[in-house]
Image (cartoon, rainbow over all chains, first blue to last red; front, top):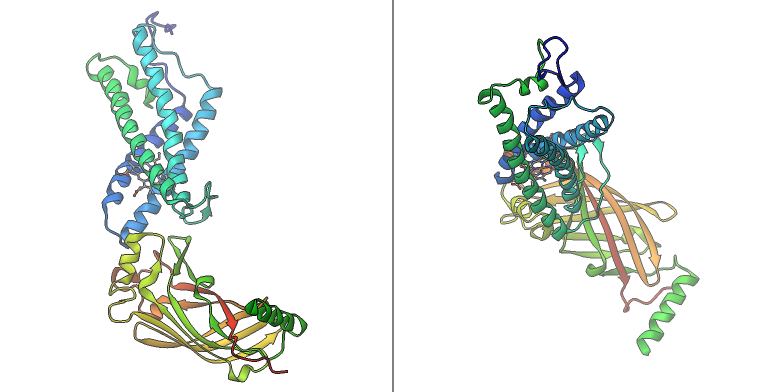
Length: 187
Length: 193
Ligand code: HEM
C-alpha cells in the first residue's frame, strides 16, 4: 500500500485492534501453556501435577476457542497487505507460516482434548464446564494421541521460532516497520 | 442333564414365588464389581477393585438373620493409571503393607419397600472402623440374586490421602463406593415352602 502523504511504501499500515488483541493474547497463553506442558509431564504424581495438568488443559481449551474465533474472524477481515517491497518468496513464506500456525493452534488443543477423552479423563474447563468426551476410553489410542500432541508441539515450536525470528530480523536487521503492523501505538 | 433339570426347577420355583425362603449365600466374584467414584480437580473419576470376597447370607423373607462380611483386597485397586495405583498403595493412602484388607461387617438390614433395602454396618479401613449405611436394591435374575448399592465415605475420616494429598481441592473428600454383587443361592439349601 502506498502512503497518501509520503507516496512511499507504507509499512505502518496496522492490523486492527481485534487482530492485535487476539495475536498477543494467544502469544501470551502459548508462552504459558507450552512450558507448562513440558514441565508437568516430567513431574512425579502429586497434587501439584494434577493441578498443573488441569491448568494446562484449561489454558489449552481457551486457546482452541480463541483460535476458532480468530480463524472465523480472519476469514471475514482481510489483513493489511504486506508492503510490495517485500520479496515475493517472503510473502509466500509468511502466508504459509501463518496458515500452519493456525492449523497447529487448532490441532494441538484438539489432540489434547482427544487424548484426555481416550484416557478416560473428562476435560472440565476451569473446573466448571465439562466438555463432551469425544472418543471412548482406549489406552493405546490415548498413548498415540499423546505422541501426536507432543510432536505437533515440536512443529509449533519450530514455526514460532521462524515466525518470531522473521519479525525480529525485520525490526533489527532490515530496520523496517514490519513489526509495527502488529504493535499498538502511534502511527 | 441332572444339573440342568435342577436349575430349571430352581428357576421355576423362583418365578412362581420369588419371595419364598431361599438363602443367597454364594458370591460370584467374576460377575460382581466393586467400583468407586471421586472428584479430582472438578473431574469425575472412576476406579475399581479387582479382588474382593464376601460371606453373605440373605433371605428376603428372613432379614433378621441376614448378614454380610465383605473384604476388599486393597492392592487390587485399579485407578486406570499404573502410577496412581502405586501411589495409593503407599503409606499416605491405603498403606496396603500394613492394612491389606478393607472390611465391611453388617450390623443389620431393613426393608424399605419394594426391592429396596438399607444395610448398616461397620467399615474397617486403614486401622479405623466407622459406621456406614448403604441403600441397596435386591433383584432376582433367574437363580441369581443381584445386590446393587452405593454409599459415600469421607477419605479424611480414614486418613486416606495424607500429607500433601490432604488438600481437598485436588482430590475431594467424598468417595462413592458402588457395589454390584451377584450372589447365588447355595444348591444345598432347599427352598422352604
Ligand atoms: C495450544 C494449546 C496447547 C499447547 C501449545 C500444548 C502444549 C503441550 C506441550 C508442549 C506438552 C508437553 C509434551 C510432552 O512432553 O508430552 C503438552 C502435554 C500435554 N497436553 Fe497439551 N497443549 C495444548 C493444549 C492441550 C489441551 C487442550 C489439552 C487437554 C484438554 C492438553 C493436554 C495435554 C496433556 C494431558 C499432556 C501431557 C501428556 C502426558 O503427560 O503424557 N493440551 N501439551
